[in-house]
Image (cartoon, rainbow, N blue to C red; front, side):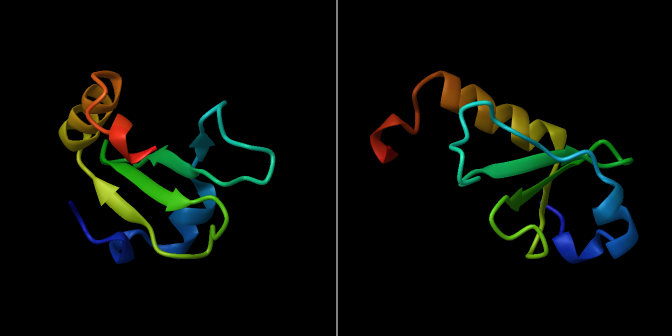
Length: 76
């Protein structure tokens, strides 16, 4: 995982942020965007000016695969 501080402000504003269709109307969800490097930026949709976490594509693939497999079902 890279440091989200490495995402310049100009780039943060130009990213194509996407959140789940399952996100509630209040926007309580995380948003993801692909960086020019291929890494994936993640932020809290309620606080878009806040910190950004940056993960490699492999890290996100592992997380999404685990979610699909039910690895985190006990948390919700």
